[in-house]
Image 1 (cartoon, one colour):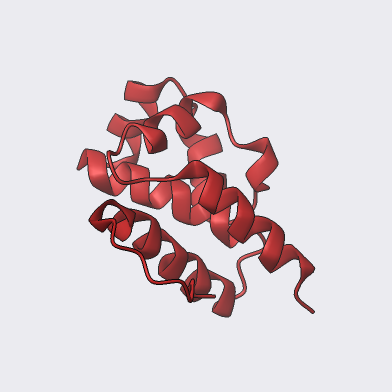
Image 2 (cartoon, one colour):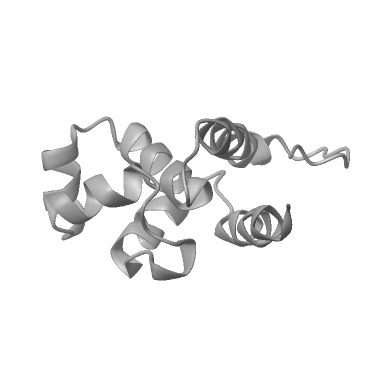
Length: 107
């Protein structure tokens, strides 16, 4: 699902990237693609491998692996991961929450 509105704000680029990633993850069968996209994007922005990123934000490596695999619902994301995502200047967690709701309502 791509937003159809025109935005003058270049800061939405990271959010749009996450939307596209979530769509791709959904097409591969991820149960919770938005949560996975948020985790993958936050880790990618930090430029760390999974162990380093998990340690840096204070989340267990196994839990982060499950999130990145799309096994954890968006509403169940650890706060530490949400904070890491919103630390990205152009990331919008609210738009990701909207996308999660929209994807959940699709048949």
